Length: 440
Image 1: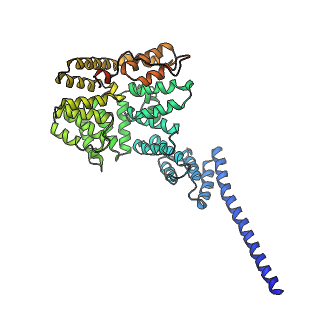
Image 2: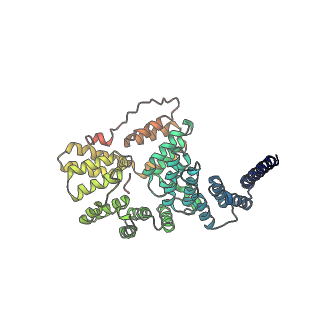
Image 3: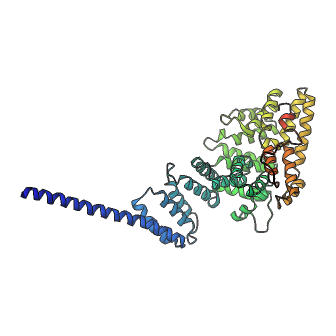
């Protein structure tokens, strides 16, 4: 009997100890989570130091808590008493703790993108983070929007196309004139598209008008902040090429080529080939083009492949095929110079009728690039839903053969049906060439 009582006492005692332990553990976890709640209250009240103190306690016990790492990044960045980039890198360390498998991964990568681009002026790193954010959540409008702005700031408006349409398709019809206006500015008036961000980032004075120098200051700042980003050298080299400062452009390309893996960079190859061809360095141009091992598609590739076939190999048929592929892309429809080269190839092949049509098309597109036209259009876009503005934008995109933009602008008209049939005034470049942007 005494043995039974002793065993019962031991069992009851053990159960009691376990209960106390479980209650104690529960209290500890409640205390840990309470720190995160207190941190959120502190953030809401702007008490950043208190927020960080509470989050630090929480992270001692829950080191992988994604929400806590995001809160810590916010508490660091929003604290104006902390100056310099130290807090930015500390915030990035916390964001890096948010794993790709976390439900908060898209938030963390978006936040990283903001910090890299807007505070550290590192668009290359920002691009990686934002693309990762969209891989986690393809519908994240903020990520699409920031990537679009990043591509504008780095003179790669054509890469923003999918992000523009992702935003356009997801906003309400009542709000679509904003993205349409900004998409026009991205291509035809990048200075105006970037003006506010350039002012915020210190590249443009409060009353200063955007200019090529604004562009140069921004691109040089990006390169200075991210010296291992090959695209940064190429983008700045293209700026110098547009200013006819070829030696400066070549120097930047050579610096880029010395970076690991950069020799096969498609944008670098396209830029170097165009310069080599311009100065008759055909053998070197062919050698550079032969390094193009990936991404053998898209505007950059087909335009460059056509140039090599046209100017180096004198293979007119292949050049026509490549140029036509380039003309099918959105930037190709604005590239009057490549269209002119296509006409020359057709002429050498004896296709005089087709050559005349393409040459006429090239001239028309060249006229559409004149600054006077776009000065007028920018003024018109102050009232984007004005019927006259809509008519002018429809006319521009019809002449360029950009039917998707034509339809989008037509749908801004009152009572416009989504099923509106679009018949451009001019045939597309592909049709004009018989199954067939500006210069970077």
